[in-house]
View 1 (cartoon, rainbow, N blue to C red):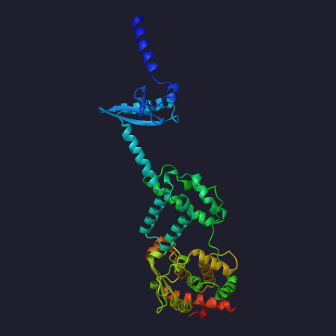
View 2 (spheres, rainbow, N blue to C red):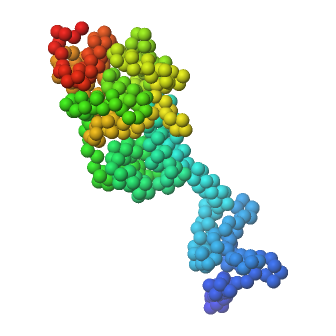
View 3 (cartoon, rainbow, N blue to C red):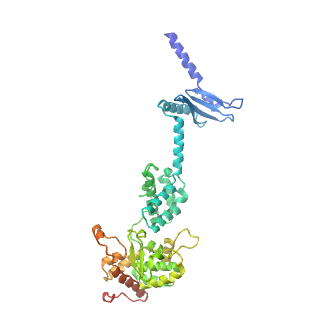
Length: 426
């Protein structure tokens, strides 16, 4: 029994001595023949010393009768102890039937595919889906423009799976710094939709980074209605608009918004094909409307006269208000309109969209018009879903009188004349 114990002890000692030491690994040299030299450590682990003296670890294994090998890393980045731990992991995989070579290839392909899924690629996919679902051209352009101006430059080529809240926050900080809190809120909303789309089919793992930034991170956005110009400031604004120092088409776009109470985007993207000046009617197709319903707008005489003059300048174009040559945009931008309005007003406490509120407030306070007529003029949806389903009335004839009255009201304001009584409305 003593002889047997001593025999096996000597075998174990021999096996231990045959394994590499840290010193041997450090001092290992390539073969004098100029070929790579191999130093076995046992169990399939080997140190390979290349002719140039560089070293790397290799694990050899046999699976289904076929010998293969995988690299475990370069020395000294991977030391002897770490190499043995890695070899043990690979040995367990082989024992379970896994193929380390195939797993490496799949992992490499997976990482390459992940790197190809950039933020911009998913964002453009989202835009395509929105377009297919029928969003208006103006809203499409707003989303695309916001992404290009604020996120594509810094995050466009970054694999979406690697974007964390801290990185997204860093790129949104400049928007907060310039005080564009409305744009910041809008960008966060769109970015959140991009990440949600990627999460839907496993291209993004974990929590939505945009969601983590919605509260207690940026300056609080104060919600409220679009800034409307007080009625007592309208006379001065209208007089200054008559002496507008800028593009004629820009002034025309502002006047069209004032006379028709349309949304700024609906006016900016207006096409000549939508207008019948003989019938004094502007028909905005459903795909350009917020509620996806066609909207017919009776034009006051002032608008028809202005549009005939504008047509001499832009009739050869598709749009009434095309962008300047060299611009990537199709039509005049919302920023250009907003700046022109604020410059004319003389302060920044006003938004283009707010002129709809000016119309609604003044027409409502006049007590000349039924609420249903006013709501139809603004193309608002019915507050009651059942009423909306059965009430198809557009009150077009009443709105003819309303829009002419409102345009005349603006003319009266410039002359310093007050409103007219209901009995005088035709």
